[in-house]
Amino acid sequence: MTILALSIGSNIDAELNIRAALGALSLEFDNIRNSTTYESQAVGFDGDNFLNLVVLADTDKKLDEVATILKRLEDQLGRDRHQVRFSGRTMDIDIILYGDESGMCCGIELPRPEVTENAYVLQPLSEVLPDAVHPATGMSYLKLWQGYDKSKQQLWAIEADWPAK
Image (cartoon, rainbow, N blue to C red):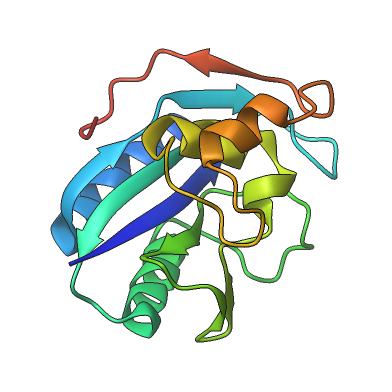
């Protein structure tokens, strides 16, 4: 089994869409577990706040199959792929880690650059995989979070009652 790490975010009917996404993910993957859920302001545009979390799962599916499943799930949850890059989302699910894969894999850069760039990805990832090491930096995700400039992006934990935890 491969450990899969997903970054999940929504700012349109976020609680409803995240609950639906977690339910659907539990049908596709094994041993679903998630970080704390964080709320943050939209990055790159003016819009409603986002809810974000990181989900870990075990899978025996190949990376391209996982990507297809996630794209289909985003579409089922109303993702509009004709929107500009920085805009509101009913659902955004990004593969941020797939086992120990590093570099370009199936058209996906792993680990995703967002891991070290965005607090809403790095903080929850450091919570669920604190000792895992980022291959490019050689630092654990917890050390990366501890060194992250937290003044760049504000986020705060919220209470969430998701089906996985």
